[in-house]
Length: 309
Image (cartoon, helix red, strand yellow):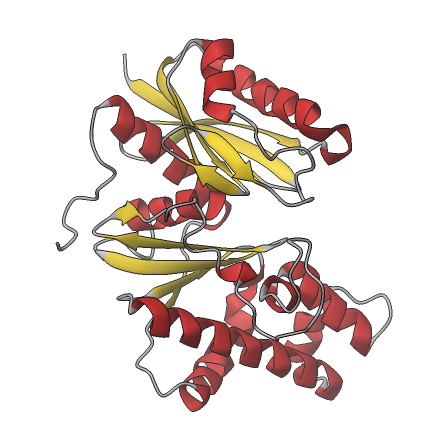
Protein backbone atom coordinates (compact mmCIF):
# COMPACT_ATOMS: atom_id res chain seq x y z
CA UNK A 1 0.00 0.00 0.00
CA UNK A 2 1.25 3.48 -0.86
CA UNK A 3 2.20 5.81 1.95
CA UNK A 4 0.37 9.14 2.16
CA UNK A 5 0.69 12.32 4.17
CA UNK A 6 -1.92 14.92 5.03
CA UNK A 7 -1.02 18.48 4.10
CA UNK A 8 -3.33 21.22 5.40
CA UNK A 9 -3.39 24.95 4.68
CA UNK A 10 -5.13 27.02 7.36
CA UNK A 11 -5.91 30.67 6.73
CA UNK A 12 -8.32 33.31 7.92
CA UNK A 13 -10.89 32.47 5.24
CA UNK A 14 -10.65 28.73 4.64
CA UNK A 15 -9.02 25.44 5.55
CA UNK A 16 -8.05 23.05 2.78
CA UNK A 17 -6.17 19.79 2.97
CA UNK A 18 -5.05 16.94 0.76
CA UNK A 19 -3.99 13.33 1.01
CA UNK A 20 -0.62 13.44 -0.75
CA UNK A 21 1.95 10.83 -1.75
CA UNK A 22 5.74 11.08 -2.05
CA UNK A 23 5.48 12.27 -5.68
CA UNK A 24 3.15 15.13 -4.74
CA UNK A 25 0.05 13.49 -6.18
CA UNK A 26 -3.11 14.59 -4.35
CA UNK A 27 -5.32 11.54 -3.97
CA UNK A 28 -8.16 13.18 -2.01
CA UNK A 29 -9.16 16.63 -0.79
CA UNK A 30 -11.15 18.15 2.03
CA UNK A 31 -12.01 21.75 2.89
CA UNK A 32 -14.05 23.96 5.19
CA UNK A 33 -14.60 27.63 5.92
CA UNK A 34 -12.54 28.91 8.83
CA UNK A 35 -15.06 29.63 11.64
CA UNK A 36 -13.24 32.69 12.97
CA UNK A 37 -16.29 33.85 14.95
CA UNK A 38 -15.94 30.71 17.08
CA UNK A 39 -12.40 31.53 18.17
CA UNK A 40 -9.55 29.10 18.65
CA UNK A 41 -11.74 26.19 19.75
CA UNK A 42 -13.90 26.44 16.64
CA UNK A 43 -10.92 26.83 14.31
CA UNK A 44 -9.23 23.76 15.80
CA UNK A 45 -12.44 21.75 15.57
CA UNK A 46 -12.86 22.65 11.90
CA UNK A 47 -9.25 21.69 11.15
CA UNK A 48 -9.74 18.34 12.87
CA UNK A 49 -12.93 17.72 10.88
CA UNK A 50 -11.09 18.38 7.61
CA UNK A 51 -8.31 15.98 8.63
CA UNK A 52 -10.77 13.36 9.85
CA UNK A 53 -12.51 13.38 6.46
CA UNK A 54 -9.20 12.49 4.77
CA UNK A 55 -8.36 9.79 7.29
CA UNK A 56 -11.73 8.19 6.54
CA UNK A 57 -10.34 7.32 3.08
CA UNK A 58 -8.53 4.43 4.79
CA UNK A 59 -5.08 5.19 3.38
CA UNK A 60 -1.79 4.44 5.14
CA UNK A 61 -1.01 7.91 6.54
CA UNK A 62 2.46 8.72 7.87
CA UNK A 63 1.73 12.10 9.44
CA UNK A 64 0.00 15.47 9.31
CA UNK A 65 1.56 18.73 8.16
CA UNK A 66 -0.14 22.10 8.67
CA UNK A 67 0.72 25.49 7.27
CA UNK A 68 -0.95 28.05 9.51
CA UNK A 69 -1.13 31.81 9.39
CA UNK A 70 0.87 33.42 12.20
CA UNK A 71 4.34 33.25 13.67
CA UNK A 72 5.08 29.59 14.22
CA UNK A 73 7.61 27.84 16.41
CA UNK A 74 8.15 24.99 13.97
CA UNK A 75 10.37 23.00 16.35
CA UNK A 76 7.61 22.88 18.98
CA UNK A 77 4.57 23.12 16.71
CA UNK A 78 3.23 26.16 18.59
CA UNK A 79 1.56 29.30 17.23
CA UNK A 80 3.57 32.04 18.93
CA UNK A 81 1.53 34.92 17.53
CA UNK A 82 -1.49 35.34 15.28
CA UNK A 83 -3.37 38.49 14.31
CA UNK A 84 -7.12 38.91 14.63
CA UNK A 85 -7.47 37.14 11.26
CA UNK A 86 -7.36 34.01 13.50
CA UNK A 87 -8.79 35.21 16.82
CA UNK A 88 -7.49 33.39 19.88
CA UNK A 89 -4.97 31.39 17.84
CA UNK A 90 -1.93 32.83 19.63
CA UNK A 91 -0.47 30.20 21.94
CA UNK A 92 -2.17 27.23 20.24
CA UNK A 93 -0.06 24.07 20.74
CA UNK A 94 -1.18 22.77 17.38
CA UNK A 95 1.17 19.85 16.75
CA UNK A 96 0.48 18.51 20.23
CA UNK A 97 -3.29 18.84 19.79
CA UNK A 98 -3.27 17.00 16.46
CA UNK A 99 -1.02 14.18 17.67
CA UNK A 100 -3.24 13.73 20.73
CA UNK A 101 -6.35 13.55 18.54
CA UNK A 102 -5.08 11.33 15.72
CA UNK A 103 -2.05 9.47 17.16
CA UNK A 104 0.07 10.62 14.19
CA UNK A 105 3.21 12.77 14.07
CA UNK A 106 2.43 16.39 13.18
CA UNK A 107 4.50 19.26 11.82
CA UNK A 108 3.38 22.89 11.88
CA UNK A 109 4.88 25.74 9.89
CA UNK A 110 3.92 29.25 8.89
CA UNK A 111 1.56 29.10 5.91
CA UNK A 112 3.81 31.17 3.64
CA UNK A 113 6.79 28.98 4.56
CA UNK A 114 4.72 25.91 3.69
CA UNK A 115 3.68 27.41 0.36
CA UNK A 116 7.31 28.23 -0.40
CA UNK A 117 8.33 24.66 0.39
CA UNK A 118 5.68 23.50 -2.07
CA UNK A 119 6.96 25.86 -4.78
CA UNK A 120 10.53 24.74 -4.10
CA UNK A 121 9.53 21.09 -4.37
CA UNK A 122 7.24 21.06 -7.39
CA UNK A 123 6.65 24.63 -8.51
CA UNK A 124 8.26 27.81 -9.80
CA UNK A 125 11.30 27.59 -7.51
CA UNK A 126 12.22 23.95 -8.23
CA UNK A 127 15.99 23.74 -8.50
CA UNK A 128 16.65 27.06 -6.73
CA UNK A 129 18.69 26.82 -3.55
CA UNK A 130 17.87 30.28 -2.23
CA UNK A 131 14.65 32.11 -2.93
CA UNK A 132 12.05 34.33 -1.31
CA UNK A 133 8.30 34.13 -1.67
CA UNK A 134 5.79 36.93 -1.28
CA UNK A 135 2.15 35.85 -0.98
CA UNK A 136 -0.59 38.36 -1.76
CA UNK A 137 -3.82 37.02 -0.29
CA UNK A 138 -6.28 38.11 2.40
CA UNK A 139 -3.11 39.29 4.13
CA UNK A 140 0.49 39.42 2.91
CA UNK A 141 2.87 36.65 3.87
CA UNK A 142 6.41 35.80 3.00
CA UNK A 143 9.13 33.22 3.29
CA UNK A 144 12.83 32.78 2.67
CA UNK A 145 14.34 29.39 1.86
CA UNK A 146 18.09 28.91 1.94
CA UNK A 147 19.68 25.73 0.61
CA UNK A 148 16.21 24.29 0.23
CA UNK A 149 15.10 24.80 3.86
CA UNK A 150 12.86 27.49 5.42
CA UNK A 151 14.61 30.14 7.51
CA UNK A 152 12.42 30.78 10.56
CA UNK A 153 14.46 33.26 12.61
CA UNK A 154 14.79 33.41 16.38
CA UNK A 155 11.07 34.05 16.99
CA UNK A 156 9.51 32.37 13.96
CA UNK A 157 9.10 35.76 12.28
CA UNK A 158 11.61 35.57 9.42
CA UNK A 159 10.00 36.39 6.10
CA UNK A 160 7.13 38.44 7.56
CA UNK A 161 7.38 40.80 4.62
CA UNK A 162 3.75 41.83 5.06
CA UNK A 163 4.62 43.52 8.34
CA UNK A 164 7.67 45.39 7.10
CA UNK A 165 6.72 49.07 7.17
CA UNK A 166 6.24 50.41 3.66
CA UNK A 167 4.81 53.81 4.65
CA UNK A 168 5.96 55.13 8.07
CA UNK A 169 2.93 56.47 9.95
CA UNK A 170 0.63 55.03 7.28
CA UNK A 171 -2.53 52.97 7.54
CA UNK A 172 -3.06 51.10 10.83
CA UNK A 173 -2.41 47.36 10.68
CA UNK A 174 -3.96 44.63 12.81
CA UNK A 175 -0.47 43.75 14.05
CA UNK A 176 -0.38 47.08 15.94
CA UNK A 177 1.98 48.92 13.58
CA UNK A 178 1.17 51.55 10.98
CA UNK A 179 2.05 51.51 7.29
CA UNK A 180 2.70 47.77 6.92
CA UNK A 181 3.01 46.38 3.42
CA UNK A 182 -0.05 44.23 4.08
CA UNK A 183 -2.22 47.34 4.19
CA UNK A 184 -1.18 48.23 0.63
CA UNK A 185 -0.54 44.89 -1.12
CA UNK A 186 -3.09 42.38 0.17
CA UNK A 187 -6.20 41.37 -1.73
CA UNK A 188 -8.13 43.31 0.91
CA UNK A 189 -6.03 46.40 0.16
CA UNK A 190 -6.59 45.99 -3.58
CA UNK A 191 -10.35 45.89 -2.97
CA UNK A 192 -10.07 49.05 -0.86
CA UNK A 193 -8.29 50.77 -3.74
CA UNK A 194 -11.04 49.53 -6.07
CA UNK A 195 -13.79 50.99 -3.87
CA UNK A 196 -11.98 54.32 -3.94
CA UNK A 197 -12.33 54.31 -7.73
CA UNK A 198 -16.00 53.22 -7.79
CA UNK A 199 -18.18 52.32 -4.84
CA UNK A 200 -19.00 48.63 -4.91
CA UNK A 201 -15.96 47.57 -6.91
CA UNK A 202 -13.69 44.85 -5.53
CA UNK A 203 -10.15 43.94 -6.55
CA UNK A 204 -11.28 41.61 -9.32
CA UNK A 205 -13.51 44.26 -10.88
CA UNK A 206 -10.66 46.77 -10.67
CA UNK A 207 -8.29 44.44 -12.52
CA UNK A 208 -10.91 43.69 -15.17
CA UNK A 209 -11.36 47.42 -15.74
CA UNK A 210 -7.59 47.88 -15.85
CA UNK A 211 -7.33 45.19 -18.54
CA UNK A 212 -10.05 47.00 -20.50
CA UNK A 213 -8.10 50.26 -20.40
CA UNK A 214 -10.24 52.18 -17.88
CA UNK A 215 -8.14 55.28 -16.99
CA UNK A 216 -9.16 55.52 -13.33
CA UNK A 217 -8.55 51.80 -12.86
CA UNK A 218 -5.15 52.22 -14.49
CA UNK A 219 -4.12 54.85 -11.94
CA UNK A 220 -5.15 52.69 -8.98
CA UNK A 221 -3.48 49.53 -10.31
CA UNK A 222 -0.29 51.38 -11.26
CA UNK A 223 -0.05 52.76 -7.70
CA UNK A 224 -0.49 49.21 -6.40
CA UNK A 225 2.24 47.92 -8.74
CA UNK A 226 4.62 50.64 -7.61
CA UNK A 227 4.10 49.62 -3.98
CA UNK A 228 4.70 46.00 -4.97
CA UNK A 229 7.90 47.06 -6.73
CA UNK A 230 9.26 48.76 -3.62
CA UNK A 231 8.40 45.75 -1.47
CA UNK A 232 10.21 43.38 -3.83
CA UNK A 233 13.17 45.76 -4.13
CA UNK A 234 13.49 45.70 -0.34
CA UNK A 235 13.37 41.90 -0.24
CA UNK A 236 16.11 41.74 -2.86
CA UNK A 237 18.18 44.28 -0.91
CA UNK A 238 17.84 42.39 2.37
CA UNK A 239 18.34 38.82 1.21
CA UNK A 240 19.76 38.70 -2.33
CA UNK A 241 17.72 35.60 -3.27
CA UNK A 242 18.07 33.86 -6.62
CA UNK A 243 14.43 34.80 -7.27
CA UNK A 244 11.35 36.24 -5.62
CA UNK A 245 8.27 34.08 -6.19
CA UNK A 246 4.94 35.96 -6.19
CA UNK A 247 1.99 33.87 -5.01
CA UNK A 248 -1.44 34.21 -3.41
CA UNK A 249 -4.85 35.10 -4.72
CA UNK A 250 -3.81 38.43 -6.26
CA UNK A 251 -1.02 36.68 -8.14
CA UNK A 252 -3.55 34.33 -9.73
CA UNK A 253 -4.51 37.30 -11.93
CA UNK A 254 -0.90 38.03 -12.90
CA UNK A 255 -1.56 37.61 -16.63
CA UNK A 256 -3.39 40.95 -16.49
CA UNK A 257 -0.64 43.05 -14.89
CA UNK A 258 2.64 41.13 -14.93
CA UNK A 259 4.31 42.63 -18.01
CA UNK A 260 3.48 46.18 -17.00
CA UNK A 261 4.71 45.45 -13.49
CA UNK A 262 8.07 44.16 -14.78
CA UNK A 263 8.56 47.46 -16.58
CA UNK A 264 7.69 49.49 -13.49
CA UNK A 265 9.91 47.31 -11.29
CA UNK A 266 12.87 47.78 -13.64
CA UNK A 267 12.33 51.54 -13.61
CA UNK A 268 12.00 51.80 -9.83
CA UNK A 269 14.75 49.41 -8.70
CA UNK A 270 18.42 49.62 -9.68
CA UNK A 271 18.88 45.99 -8.60
CA UNK A 272 18.79 42.92 -10.80
CA UNK A 273 15.61 41.30 -9.53
CA UNK A 274 14.34 37.99 -10.87
CA UNK A 275 10.64 37.57 -10.19
CA UNK A 276 8.52 34.54 -11.06
CA UNK A 277 4.80 33.88 -10.66
CA UNK A 278 4.01 30.93 -8.41
CA UNK A 279 2.86 27.83 -10.29
CA UNK A 280 0.99 25.77 -7.72
CA UNK A 281 -1.79 28.20 -6.84
CA UNK A 282 -3.98 27.14 -3.93
CA UNK A 283 -2.22 23.77 -3.73
CA UNK A 284 1.19 25.16 -2.73
CA UNK A 285 0.49 25.27 1.01
CA UNK A 286 -0.98 21.78 1.13
CA UNK A 287 1.90 20.30 -0.84
CA UNK A 288 4.52 22.10 1.21
CA UNK A 289 2.95 21.08 4.51
CA UNK A 290 2.86 17.45 3.36
CA UNK A 291 6.50 17.65 2.28
CA UNK A 292 7.51 18.99 5.70
CA UNK A 293 5.93 16.11 7.63
CA UNK A 294 7.11 13.64 5.00
CA UNK A 295 10.72 14.66 5.53
CA UNK A 296 10.38 14.85 9.31
CA UNK A 297 8.84 11.39 9.50
CA UNK A 298 11.76 10.06 7.48
CA UNK A 299 14.26 11.88 9.71
CA UNK A 300 15.36 14.28 6.97
CA UNK A 301 15.97 18.02 6.92
CA UNK A 302 13.61 19.63 4.41
CA UNK A 303 15.83 19.78 1.33
CA UNK A 304 15.06 19.38 -2.35
CA UNK A 305 16.98 17.15 -4.70
CA UNK A 306 19.23 19.06 -7.06
CA UNK A 307 19.35 22.39 -5.23
CA UNK A 308 22.80 23.96 -5.04
CA UNK A 309 24.58 24.35 -1.71
